[in-house]
Length: 155
Image 1 (cartoon, helix red, strand yellow):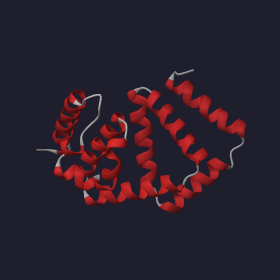
Image 2 (cartoon, helix red, strand yellow):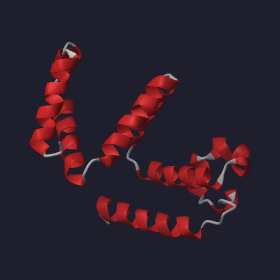
Image 3 (cartoon, helix red, strand yellow):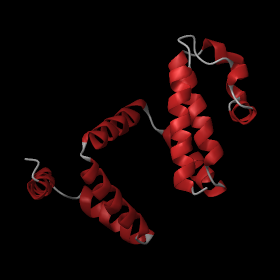
């Protein structure tokens, strides 16, 4: 089974499972053994979590179990970075994520590709580009934004 077909199968299973979940949430015993191992730190307070949070955690455990060791390490680093952010920084990231989700699928794909290309650059080149961006005046930033929107036909 390819990674894509495994992902699709998991998504379908999650949809069926989510639809079958009761308004009372998911009982700890309804989780698979593997999910319980991943979620062991939550066991003591599991019944206190709201049903939506239980479902989120169960889906997250499934995603975790499907990850390669390298993907898990990357997820750990991202989580540690998230934990180091203050409330204002987290709110800003949540807002950027909402904005990203509001884009068309084509625009999200384009931005994802731009990001992948950026991340393939050597670290010193990425740092240089970040610094150049920070040095832009508000007017220059707005001009870049307007050119991009005109090119995409969103303005």
